[in-house]
Length: 494
Image (cartoon, rainbow, N blue to C red; front, side, top):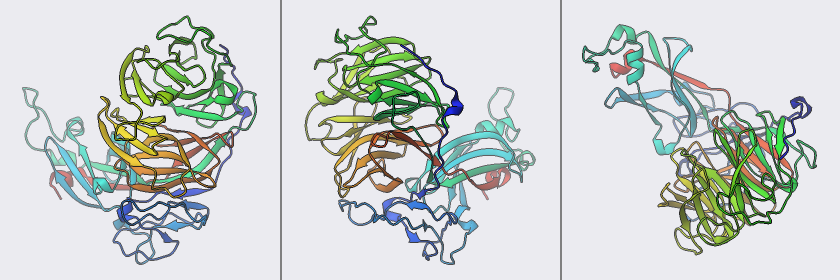
């Protein structure tokens, strides 16, 4: 194994000005050219950026074919009847008291938003307590957010405990008057603001990049497949280190055999998964998965060519769930296998077939925060959702996308949007669906060939463009719309 460190100032990420707008669910999609009038009550004007990409207009019956856009990059915005911004768009319409100091807050929103919630000092933006962060609110939520204020009420003396340690009845209205419930949100909108990588074999350069993953700090791990190595970059795209080189696994790795030949060397590394303690890499050429610590030291390998449980045949996409179990697309065996962190076989789902729950060459896998998995079934042109026990949750058919040639990557954004890298007649696009299969639109313009997708904790999206030998970062909109409500009004249900 070799780890090469490099001065992070040597590689500069380029800034892009192109922007996109992702819209609401298909049933309520509103797309208007800039300045056009919309008949709805809510409105939103993104700004004057003339280089903005918008999601394509999708409407009609459930199985109507989805077609690519016409290539027109004209700005498309949400506006109200008078064409001006309105505070009504981001107003709280009503509050609903639930139980145990939980409240349901209803908003007037014109589409999906990324939202955070805090307790702030009254009449200011000084945040003193975080309730939740970076949560996606869609039309499926009916514009409503549930917040549990029990701990916050106790912390700031709005409620108290009796001598037995149980919450006392009633509220301290004077204390409540000193604090606001503070929401910040942005319409679901992304900017292409960073790309890094170019063809080559030197550190920081790429050859046919494939799968990638982002850790909690926003560092990006890339399978540099053509160079048979893994490279790590910081959030700005600066090279940090690399490890691996080409080698065959002559001994045909057996499960948990730490003494495998040419460990920490790769033959077509195609997918990487990162946990707080480990890095897992799948190798299509060596039919195995290798485990490393976060300093890239080899720990063990498992898999090896074969059809029996625990063996692999051309493994592709891998991902780790919240319990650090490893899920692997055993592509040529037409199944997905689940392993523990030490490479022990746990579960198998799928098997070849065209019916529900069966696979025809599964190529990639995405996992949400609840350990639900979404498998991209390339041969059947669909994404199938399963819970952590292998029970089917539903299917997202990709056949409806007009001009679809293939699909090669999948990821889950904020638990509610499924991203798929699809190849059309002339380009690749990043398609977005809700978990029920409703098409949102395309994110981020066009790509040469999408070979990997990753999402970080801050809702940034990373795309591996294997055809262009580069990594592209789509950043969530940074400016936030603030909405505040005094806690006294909440407890008085006003």
